[in-house]
Length: 368
Ligand SMILES: Cc1cc2nc3c(=O)[nH]c(=O)nc-3n(C[C@H](O)[C@H](O)[C@H](O)COP(=O)(O)O)c2cc1C
Image 1: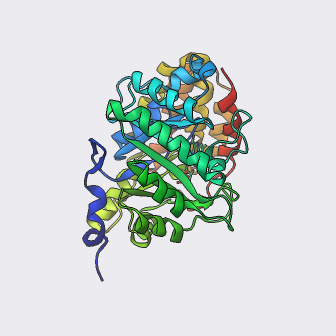
Image 2: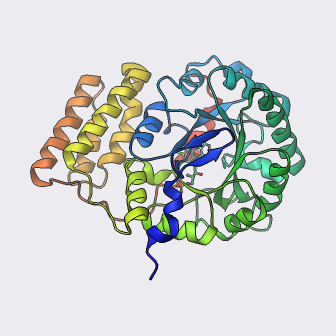
């Protein structure tokens, strides 16, 4: 049998996105409320070759909000800095692209993948896939705004609007014609939200239809699944979202499996403690005490959810409001665990949480 390494070593090789080269083809998915700068940097440190920042609204009135300015904070981040924008108006999207370029964006990603029914009371995200002329108008306007800056534009989308309207391939061809530099396809329709299973036939069809790099996304939770998706689609890269929550070293796990054909050992418990504490320091630094302690809870919860005593710890942690308390509790939890488990116990495979993106989308409208 051919080993994984013989087939897919290319995934662990660099990829060009316009004028930029990323070190490998294992990408972390943009997740609003999750992939902030500290989390993106952690994923990159632990093996992700590329990360796109959370969605930034194209609404000018929200640009100076604390939330948007935190999202647009790229201090210390490894290049290339990629920023995702979403909206429904071509001129506003072009302006948003230019605004983000002024603030350091080196790649602009257009979001046609978010399943929220409405973003800021307008159809946006994957809903745009229902209106192909408007989608194309947006693509053209953003490409035109980015061209003078030599900033490539990428597009993230779903397989289509609904089971009956899978138009990803047609949009992909038009987007390539319009100058899009890379496409990411999440293997679900907009109608599916996060339900059911991602399918990879449509992603394979998109890959076959265009010459630009195509990234496969959806339900990749293990090195085996990464390999299977890669083989099925022939894509140039894969993107992992929910499976990286609480397990940002999954990128290194996948790379190791692809290179050596076998799993590497689970990380040392004390190593995970160190990663998490460094992540918390960065996180608290960006958000401050009040917001920082609260928003860090979900990251800590994901990290401990499958561990012995994890559920009880999660509840206890939700009662702590100060940075020092939170840091000490996390540190003690992992130190205690290391006494019985030298290496982190492996998490059982289970369904991924599917409701968080739905909850997150409306907050794109809030200015806090
Ligand atoms: C909490 C959450 C927030 C998300 N936010 C965005 C977003 O802002 N932009 C986007 O293009 N996709 C967003 N997504 C979709 C992911 O990028 C990805 O396409 C999807 O989760 C499927 O990949 P996965 O199965 O590896 O998680 C979000 C997903 C989740 C779970």
